[in-house]
Image (cartoon, rainbow, N blue to C red; front, side, top):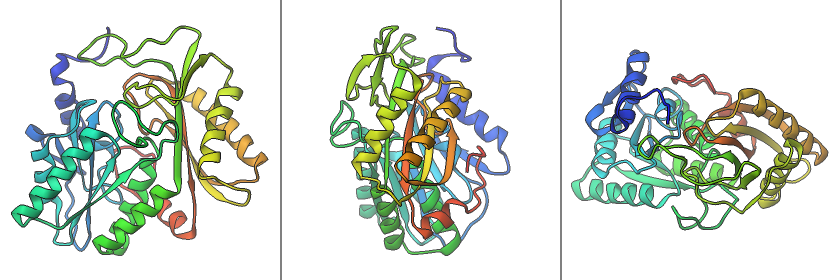
Length: 332
């Protein structure tokens, strides 16, 4: 294994320190608990927090800033953030309007955020509510979760909910309703050409033959719908895009935002080839494209492959997607 790291145990801590040092005007941290939070003062808004295992960067710490998340709690690679970190983060960023947890549907993440909510209630801390994000259409259940997984479509939830809280100062109940509405209208599916390698293990997390791809792979390398022989871009992108479209379903006349998300090891040129194919598929289905996002938004370390997410839009979603966000990565 060749990676730009020192000790595997230090990867997450050193990454977070580098992130804060590179964005001293935007971010602060409680490094011993792996909490990243906004440095700028803000008032009159519900605080928005997410968190999960590391290894999916830029998700979530890189989305902390004005117009998106107010804090993120990072776990070790592919491991949930700690209970005490979540509790401390909520207390740290609460401004008296409450805190909304946006949690991808993985068992460890859900358990720790749920326990954090209970502890905050017991301690008389800030009012807290939670929305579980489950946009992955690939499988109903997986190794890491009961129900659909949360994957790259969560970025649309962060963006729209963060903008709404920042710009309109709505209450916690209204913000939760909006988050659930976005989640209800976003669907995703991905595929892997090659496994990822975790720093601790130093070898691929799963075996994938040189002529195989995994359709519907999870963010931790967990199996998807099926393992198939390698196929050209037109065919594999159509397979996952059709699965996404048919799930909601999206229909002729719908207007959508498109996200083509790299899983960490895919050249950007190949992501744009994928975006071109998605556009052609949607145009043939008479589904209107409002905006397309192409980059690494939610990765699995160095996994090769990509995912496609669609968000069915209304006028409010469109407005909030276009609202400015001051975050370390300039993706939104």
